[in-house]
Image 1 (cartoon, protein in one colour):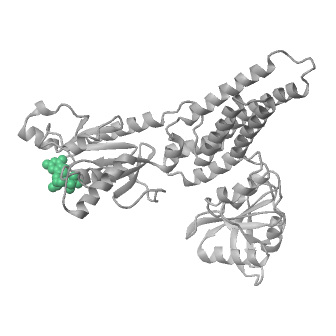
Image 2: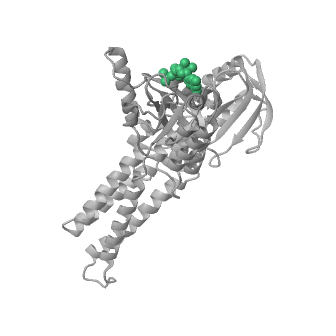
Image 3: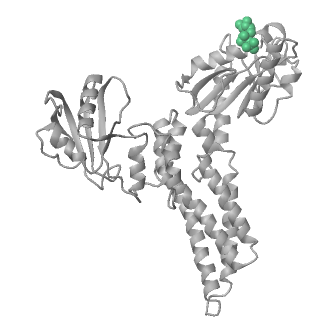
Length: 446
Ligand code: GDP
């Protein structure tokens, strides 16, 4: 691996005003920053926070009194010498310190540069590095748990275990090619090919996971559908007011319908309100209905809302959308009891009234149950990225080819390619060309 020789720095805490801001340096010259900027100049003991006066490198003006921590290589996040300045988080303080670091010829870090160095110095594999970005971006408990599990190395270990099986298969199959006349245990090739077949099935099964890990990273979409005027917008507003809103945008969502991002029972949810489903000659309304139906097609889960006033009469267009991923909800339950009596409170999953709040708690509980069911953990750490999925599909493709190969040499070659595909996920095999893409999604200072 190439050891980056430059010393980089970046603000590791959020930009803007804060009580404390952390500026972090990594690289062979990191300790020089202490000698040039701090009074006293003495290098602090490793991993011990010490209070130092920080002076501007050119003007010698006192910038701040700050905590300084030194993490000597290799026992640091990046594996290089790392120095942290915990200064007061005012813009002027940060600017003055940044200016001094520039003047000392340190380079401003690119997004993800610290984690990239950690990977390049063998402190973590690629799945763990990706988990760092996921943990920084996690907005809900379930996302945090998934990222933390990956950061602990569970995902990388799973892929490496599979790769170890293939390495063993390769060794034995190659031995049979090279030493066919020698005394080798009988049936060795047959046993290894049975292992390969088993592994191919295991990976296929693992891939057939309804994308739960990826969806948890990106957010789970619940779409509200139904005829006009049944209270869809009222339901969206009621749920949005009750649950914590997620402020940031969720990647990949479009803005052609009204949507809110919520933390529902620890899960990241995008709740989408759509135009009422009805036949219309009005061009704009028809377009709204078309988009609503398109959203219904993409939704992870649907809330089909009907009007209590007309219940149990069903709107046909909405009825057609009923399936295993839908809840039938009758809103305006307050009007049912007034007009028809309790006898018609049958045939739906839930009766609610956004006007009175009736049934909203039960709806929320039910939604969390439904989401739990879909994200239920099967034991193995979930697949969290398209990059991993593509590599695993490539791996299975090679394994399947290996199993029907016309000659032992071709079989071995396909197993080798399958093993390489797995190695790409964890970064144990030449991934230089991938690194720019992977670390581009990080924030600066990480
Ligand atoms: P949408 O067109 O389906 O989005 O429906 P809206 O949310 O705009 O609501 C349509 C009408 O139904 C409004 O006048 C709401 O005040 C009313 N409404 C919504 N929820 C309830 C409810 O639970 N009970 C009653 N009686 N009226 C409701």
